[in-house]
Structures are given as structure tokens and as C-alpha cells.
Image (cartoon, rainbow over all chains, first blue to last red; front, side, top):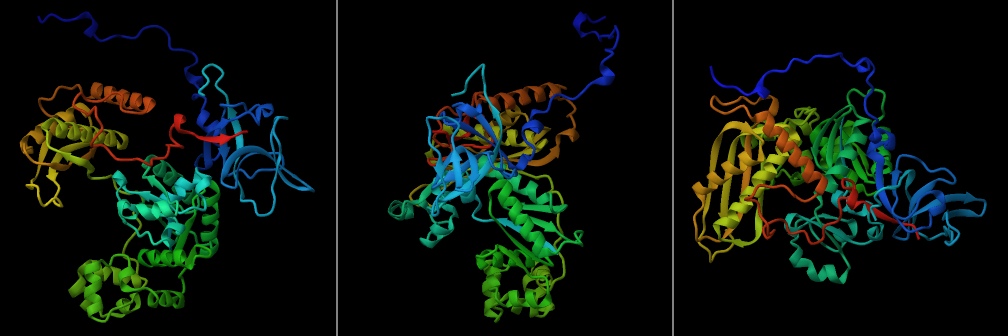
Length: 134
Length: 420
């Protein structure tokens, strides 16, 4: 008879099946959680402190959904005269303002002739508290 | 009705999406190796930059008009393309992706939709979701939809053109030069012009027997399509690719065996990775090398070889090994090599791979190893794990001096948003 290795032998599984087997849930789907509209969802890295008081510090990753129409006071990604920025959109009787969430910074009032677009609406903020990426 | 939805200046639009500073500037995207302009903003077109203009010929123009130049960033364009297609599929159940920036939609099932309304809904949604402007052409056949899309682009205004009534169709046919008809190449164009066929309307009116005699079945099909008879169906899912090719010019001349080997090994590895992504395996491997035919002063050499693989595979180390053997059969020292390539042929779904009689059954284990390699390389970006043959110096890889980031596919490439 050929010599054989014990570890090559087939294994018969013994013991009891887990009682949880019938109740298994799928894993938490973070993709679905963060992307309500997958084809419209993008991520960006925040540079600067002007939104710090809105829980969006420097280095945070923001999830941006272009399919969500921003409401008054939504936090948005705007482009103003060729520059991309994150601000709070505030509409008042006096006009449209891009408002920071940090007293050290000033609001921007949207004037006629400015090249202003809303790029997308910020829906989530992700902060790595264990290993900052910036 | 058939819709053809086409992204406007697609590569440029992708670059602009993440770079608001270039929204009003002339922008061009260059082909692989930063060779020629392959996508141009309207401002760049207005400067007279034509499709395919070599970059080196317009250096002065680029400098003078501050033209923004980008290397092609297919990781980005591919991702944005998928998003655009997804949005369109949510409107039109039956679609066929025709290229990275074009998709056909069969509207026959959408009996309650008015074509022009549907077109504007699609256009708005794609722009809102993905930021990419598209043009929509709607007509009874694919060939006519292609033509309608051309008109939509020309019209400049809404980006929508519907040619659904006989009157609209015949007006469009009369306004379209024969050379601009989808499926009519330069050779057929000059033949037709010699026979007084100048417009699409002339061609549609020509006797079918004459068309068949001179332009064969393909020309006849085009004519039928122009007459509103559907001959080219929508291929729901693009059929699985039959071949996967990775080939490239070196960017400089290469003579040494080792350098050519490194290039071939890298291309074989790239084919293997593409196949694993698609879930296919190759039954044959084709390798070619060639000198530069434009260098008249050089001795010319071209050779290629196709090898049957003992077992269909997508395993990098197997493919590299076979590619090396193939290269050994065709490599001759003493030539200035300019280009080489590897084509994985006769692809089969990996679930249908048959083991060769004497091949050991290590295939599943190999597969696990390759998947691990892929995922490590994905996590760490560059190919940190690669076959020993594969290059160290990147001389012959792509020249990409103006490459933007992989903004949508890599965490370390995310765009920055100013918060100050």
C-alpha cells in the first residue's frame, strides 16, 4: 500500500450546525448606505476648515450626490468662477449666499455675472479617526 | 423608433467635470502616448484643432491660446461612461452600448412615450446625475438615428433631433452628404460621387439592384435603413469579446532582447488581468513584433506567431511563459523594434474551461492566487506584484505627461474641494 499523509484524508465534519444559520443576514452594505443614486454619487476630499463647525473638518471625505436637489441650508459642492468649494447654500430675501460653518470665514454672496453652479449635494461625511489620510 | 445617445466631446467633458477652472478654456485630450488630439472642446474646435491632429504640430497654438491638454485617462472615462449608460438604461429597457460614449436604445416598447419628451428627459437626467452633456437623435432605424444624432449636434441648441415623420426624414436625407452616412467609407463615397450620388437622399433613391451589385450586401443594408427598413438590430448585450489585445509602440526604439521580453511580458500580464476581469480564458496566444515602417533608414522586420495553449487560461504566469516562448520564435536581434503586442484569442468563459489530459488539476488554486494578486495590485495601485520578467524601467510604457487623477475609482485620487 502506498504511504499516505494523514492530512490528505477526507474530513468528516462533526458537531452541531449553528442555530443562527437560518437567520443569517447579509453583511452591512455600506455601498448602498452611502450611495442612494450610485451613478450620481461621487466622493471628494475636504481641504480647509471653513466647514469645521458642521462636523466637516479638514481631511474629511464627503459623499456628494448630484441627483439630490439641494434645499435651503443644504451643504453643497459649488463652483464659483472656476473654483470648487464646499459651503452651505442659504437663500434669503436678500439673495443667495454660500455660507461657511466657521466664524473665521466669510460668506460669499452670489452676484449677477458670477459663474455659479451647484455641482452636487453633500449627503454624508466620512472621517477616519484612527488613521487620518491627510 | 431607435434613439442614439452620444456624449458631447466625451473625454473633454469628463475632464471638465472635475476641473471647473477649465470650463471656459479650450481643452483637448490626447490619444495613447500623447500622440494626437482625440477629443476637443468647442473652443478648441474653433481654434481649428482637428480630430487626430498630432500634438507636436500644434505646440505653438497650445501655448498662445492656453489650450488645456490632457493625456487620455481611461480609468476615469470608463467609470463615467458606465454611469451615463446606467442612467440611460433606467429610461430605455432595451439598449446596446455601441462605444464608450454612444448607446443605442430601442424605443419600440415605450408606446406611451413621445420621442421628443423622452429625449429631453434623458438629456436632463444624464446631465444632472453625471454632469455629462449628451445629444439624442431619434429615427426609425439605427442608420437614421446616427444621422439624426449628427443633426442634433449641429443644431447647437437643444441637442435633440427627432426624424420620425416621412417629411422630417426626407429633409434630413437631402441635407446629409453621402460621405457622412454611417457605414459609407471613403472608398464607397468617391465611387458614389462619381455616379452622381451626392446626398443620403440620392443614395436612398438609387436602384437597389445597382447598390447591391457595387456596394454588396452591406451597402444594400445601409440603403434599406435609410429607407426606414430596420436591418441592423439592437444587440442587447454586447457579445463577449472574442479577443483581447494589448499592443503599444515603445515611444522609443528598442533593440535588446531583454527589453522586448519585458514589454511582451507586461502585455501578456495585462491581457491576463483583462480576461480575469471579464471571466474569460484564452485558448490561443498571438504575439507580434515590428520595426517602425516610417523609418526608411531602418531595416524592416515584422513577425508574428500564434500558439495553441494546452489549457485555456487567464493565469498571468502561464500566459507570460507562453508569450516568452512565442517571442523566442520570432525575435531576431539587430532590428530597431518599434512596437509589440500580445493578443489573447479564442476566449471562452472560465466556467467552460476543459482540462487537458495531462495538466495537473491545480487550476482552482492558481485562480485563487491570481485573484489575490489582482486584489493586492488594486489596493496598492501600481503593479506591486508582477512576473519577474515584467519591466522595472518604464521606458516603453505609455507616455502620459498630462494625466489627470482617477477621481472616481481611487481613494487616494479623490478631487479636493476647497474649504477655506
